[in-house]
Image 1 (spheres, rainbow, N blue to C red):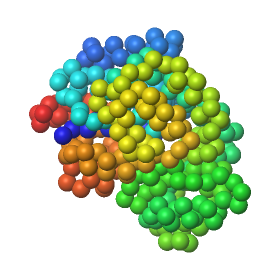
Image 2 (cartoon, one colour):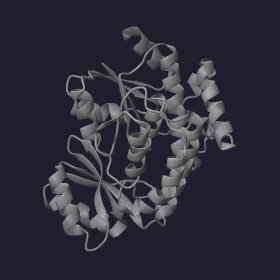
Image 3 (cartoon, helix red, strand yellow):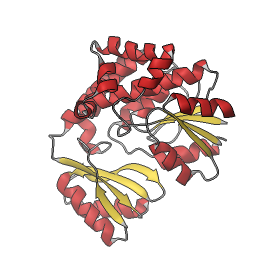
Image 4 (cartoon, rainbow, N blue to C red):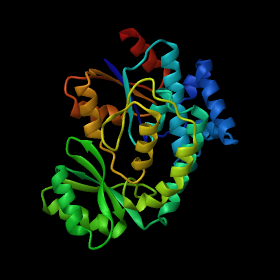
Length: 307
């Protein structure tokens, strides 16, 4: 059984998808559709940079979504289809486009605003994220609780294999990193992010995004979408939208998502879109699984050879 998984923020690179757009009409059309939906040439930014503009959250999110959907449409055209889908943070929107829950143009506009609202929720420099390595979830929660001192700090991404990302105010994240090391963590690595995603500081972004998500036309997904917030397969439009709303200020439970996919019978995972971050995580969570990523024409040829 095949699952498609879609990457989140951090996977972006200048030039991603260009070889596909040059070679396949369906991919070129996808980038053109994104330009039309946003009323500006995001494809030019994706293909040519500059990187500092591409890494602005409000640009990164529609850029990665567009690249991922271009790859998914090509796979779909080739008859390679999943039984389940999931995405890491932003990638959950790509998953819902692939599942037919959301129209691509609506999703591009939603994630542009999602990125903007998330960035504007916290003044630059006042929030932070850090990766805690080698400490389990209970230990990380304990470190956060003991370091909070009335400020926000909590697990944001539970990525599996002893890697948990925390988010909150800059001072509280720094204290929690020190406390985690005292509790046995191997390392606490500050991350170069523009905002503290997936924690209570994102509540203002959730409030702003909720009416837009509620207003957008949504269909019941064609294939179940395993959600970040609870690792449960979403099979209705209403449940899907609820999960996307809660996701903004809640942790991404990626280890649980992959375990749920495995429990549902998935043995083959295809990372659809830029980068290989999810492939690395899945390898550590689902031992024995077959994992491939598709971000260029060569990857497609390898996948077709096995399908």
